[in-house]
Image (cartoon, rainbow, N blue to C red; front, side, top):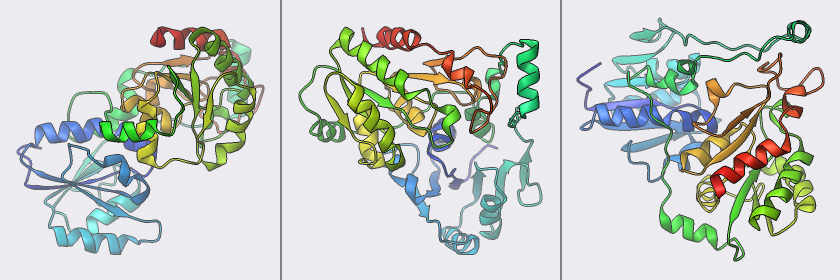
Length: 343
């Protein structure tokens, strides 16, 4: 796909975790096309993620209410020569098709794209209850996926380019402003107990609280509790149970503030969710209990702790049996992994 044309559009993905995992492809595209003008089209809720981001020239946004043809008309005015379509949805490809961009690259959807790459080799699906019970009866080993199946590679294949870790940029003045929200404290650790996908991705609340208290005894640390508005009941329970200083910011941060506050943390204890990817991408060590999902496919570069049970990963939103994957991850494991990056 070289040489790259002058005007390139990247149709970005719509979810926080996926957007962070697409940043290696944006970086590699900039390296491969240093003289091109690169525009990222993304949902308005994710626009702040790419503020001060050095690998794109412009960010265009759309909202929930804007239709395919409206977006296509706006794109057509920019006269893009090449579009890389990161999402696998037909809608995203239709936007590019109706924008009449001459080169259109993505996975599948060959009737809408001018260059259609095969769908990712690793495709996941939710296991049935019958499959789960059979694996348990057989005492099978936890399924391990090949590293090349990681979601990051799905975007890199469109360049094509080699792997690099997700990276996002936070300015020091943003970090300084974030610190004003925190009392004077030697060490701050972050704790993110929610997960939008569902309860199957959530390490039990009581274990988060116990881990927090054990770490306070070792580090005399304070805790910043993170999450969206729907996570406030979870963080409230943990705040009540925690020893030491606690600042509960669930539902009280913008995306940029979240990036900056993560930078104030020595480490972040989190479930497998969008903020996990965000914390790792701004350079903060993460410690992540994995149950129903696969760290080989969507995990951070470092910090995953897996429950070794026959039925994992099942990719289900809710556990249909006894939640053994997360219960198999002990508090001591999480505490020890956290101490490794804090001491």
